[in-house]
Length: 225
Length: 225
Image (cartoon, rainbow over all chains, first blue to last red; front, side):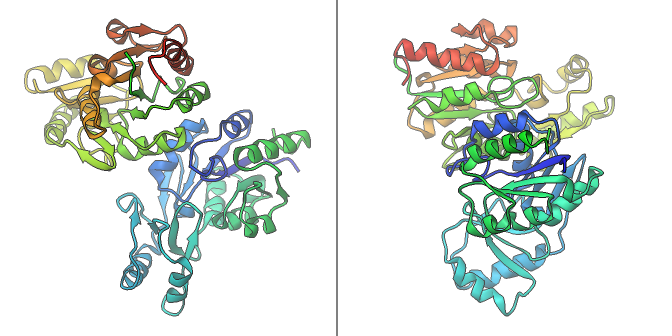
């Protein structure tokens, strides 16, 4: 199988723990001829900037699949109101701090300074359509049926491809669906066990070293150019 | 003189012409012990993301000095309304396209696809307080008395420093005032002649190679650590 594009998570995958770019990953991505898509839980403005600085072509998945940009911009705001209701509900019992509220259009992002398990328990009964995802960098209150996998399907469609044409690389539980719908899934060495379980390849290297290792391996196999 | 901090422009200075990061500059900045401030004409959300990815501490000057962040966020919206009026005035005669209108709070950013000289001529009489700056990446309609120099003064104050404690590095006409108020000004090799004229050092290297060269030279002189 020769893959026709690659989609890569940012925080923890292209970056170190402190969210600074691992230049080994940047150079590996720049060595590819196929399109490189950036996929993140961050807001679209941040995803766009990351794409520019990394040197990919501006095709991005943001807000965990809620926002996509490929020439045109699309927001799926189906669950925004429900996420806000869930936030209000949780805020009665927990001290929560929103991240990028002005720019986040499809979900609610929160600082990681509260008991996520407790919040999950509280939401279960009243909000069966809403879930809480902890990426290790932020916590997201999001619609269950929107994720980086649905975002990848839509981006693939906008690019005239299938999601199976993609190699997907990530580190965190919010990358699971993206790896599942991609043709080949890579979990970097520092990835969460839940992501390693669904990956076709788990790299030895962590963060950017893992990305460079996966790109090198797939080039060697002539499965990506 | 030992400088206590450094402030660096992003597009064209830390990046190549295509706005992708020059990793040589990233590594040079990460080798420093002093605080590194990012200064850009871009919106705050973009400046923040750049600071995270480059691996500096989140202290930023955005919107050409109109927005600063150092723990707290400050916007100087004094000229926003006048900039919008100037935009409306110019739009009667020129086809202009705004950049990041949702996130730009202190000035108006425009795509570089119109006759900037003609626009400057048109504004002269009716808008003496407003200027048009072309960074080579975008065109900005901005208040004359707000610039990266005033932004640097404010950031220095928030950091408990003087602007003269800073080394400033840039490439473009919108960096002139920043170099003027800094203690030591560097223009990278690809810089606009107007910036080279006010610089204490013009590097041989272009873009990130110039940044790495300046950092190396100042370290050798023991003027920065």
